[in-house]
Image (cartoon, rainbow, N blue to C red; front, side, top):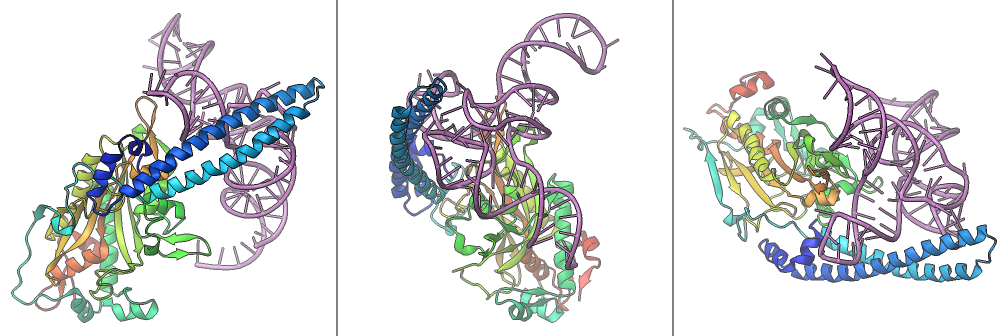
Length: 423
RNA sequence: GGUGAGGUGGCUGAGUGGUCGAAAGCACAUCUUUGCUAAAGAUGCGUAGCCUUAUCCGCUACCGAGGGUUCGAAUCCCUCCCUCACCGCCA
């Protein structure tokens, strides 16, 4: 959520920065501003009347003690109460409407976020390694998965539906070994505290990180309990500190957590057509940081480097791109995507998206810290995949496939996987 | 799921209709004094909003949440949520 004071003081600048995302948000900004004015005027009157009531009620108390007749004042207060109820309803309604609209306005892109209209304009920041060459025709992971018996898409469809997969034997073991490898790497080498969190969350959590109210159709929901299946560990992990005032010394707070992620992918192109690449459920190891405003941009660089390290250790060719203003997510101020090369696809796959949300999420979830002067300020929040598993699995088997159809396991993963190859 | 107890400021814990945003203690911050790694004293110390040039002052709200009674509610009534204990059930 944006700071309403920023909108009041500098509406044109806010509109201009939002316009860089594409779409027109100026009408929303104007609407919020007009509601804000009405809201404050109603609030001021309500508070004045409440003050009157408090004063008169004390008079009644004193009067009764002294045996005086207080019926005239009581009648007066009854009149005030009627007015308080009326004006109070106005104030509350305005407050609710203002918040609802504010929750639907995306974050301002950071000055460091390149301006552009769409994904085509995302600058490439760096490339690591190079695409491996094969003296045979590299296969797609679905073909490899089937011939090795490690992936079973039909079984996923049978027990749940399309875009659900079953990993078998060495496939299941590979997935599990990757999870352990990633958790160990980030917790022991990069200074993140490992957390294991619930996969079902309250709606407030999704509001906090920005999925609700606007993207409710993308998450699975259990109406009976009003709980949501998490679309990413970002939601429960960041919300660990919702409505808290953390100590400056605690920052930066750094968490790494593994969770499955559940996404309805309503309206997504390519659902169910490309093996593991877009699933309704996939595993992910997520990195989350809570920082001060002064350090968040540096921390974004570090976080991105931490995620890249995964691919470096596994020897997977990748590139980092910087998302332009037209392509960054709803709550993000700046985002780097890490894309790993998948030889069987002949393309890059996004395996990590590292974002700095500034104080946008912190404001939504009332996450603050006390600064040197003892003043409460909103934290900055960041997160990035470290990394998504299904696509990492794809890149790994496609990259390390051999002419005989077996898959070599890269050296650093062998202690986790338990052998040097699959097949 | 059943029964019982309870939810007050960072923590402990008073407060059963009026001047309580809330005693006291602890913790914390600053200052003072004495001084050998600590003690004593003083002061300060919740959050949000409104007003405002202002993080001054002032005002309003908040004692699990939401309703109700009343001129007035942390205090009375109702509903819900949560925590703890025991029982049942269960991975």
